[in-house]
Image (cartoon, rainbow, N blue to C red):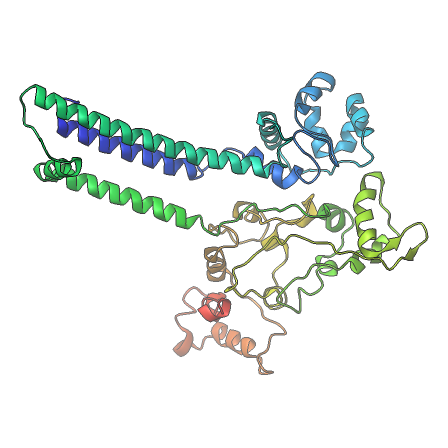
Length: 441
């Protein structure tokens, strides 16, 4: 190949394009991506656990080997999903439950593969000289930065190799008495070669331009996609206990959802309505104590001390500043149930997260959508497919605007609304749900 400059240059272009395409594809998740143990650790474990030091929970480095050696096969999975069941059936699990005054949360929705991914990630961490890794997120970031640095290094190596081999070819041509390029710079020599081989130059340029455009759009399509985001919270609130086992209505805590654009975060006083009397079981005392500290409540004296403190929750569903979303419009007028957008919270062991669209599609009665959750495409697709069957209690300046429009559309004023009645249904889009000013300031 190196005896022919034409073949050598063409092979180099193909190799560079292949490496660039592989790099772009390596960052693009496949249809069935590998489970990210580091991300799962950050979202589910890092609040209480650390890879290399004890905290609220014990350190996790080497914990899988300990369970495999002392407990029944597969018992670690049961422990993570429901520690009480594991402690009741295995002596080692029972001994572990007695080591800490606080007990672990239950993760009934986690799979064995996800547990394996978390433990594999933990075992792969290396403790630095200054102490342990920072709860997982720092190590994940370091891995990503290291991966990017690797590609930069490979790119530099390829460039050096190309320049070196180019010089070798020049020297060989001179030594064999072939066509020389004495006095020409690399750029001038390449330009001369490009004009002599214009067809290959054009083909390579088109391929390179196409590859760059694909990489650009793949990057842009990932901007703002936040599916699976579940930040840690100051209190690990188990929705499955409150909304599931105890059957508390979502609107009791998020009491502004029917009359405000925001669903609202319950104040500590709302928590105290129940927790004045409910102190919790042994595994819940530490969590409830945080509520008492915020409210200034002394459970022993049954009095308020007057010394209160804030509970700083981390916002989960963060919309851009130019986007307007109104909960009351969707819940009161549209009749949408909370689980249609937030998932089945009666089964959520922890706090809220941005549910992937694949999980929302499993909710009974949900329209099957394809765009990532909380993106504009997701909203547009839902508005275009959701049929409006009944609007009650909605009015516009007292004139029942929506009721009248709905009546006309369904009852056949075809001279005005024939285009809306072709599919024999009225969608949110046909009531103005695709107007830009509805959602953007």
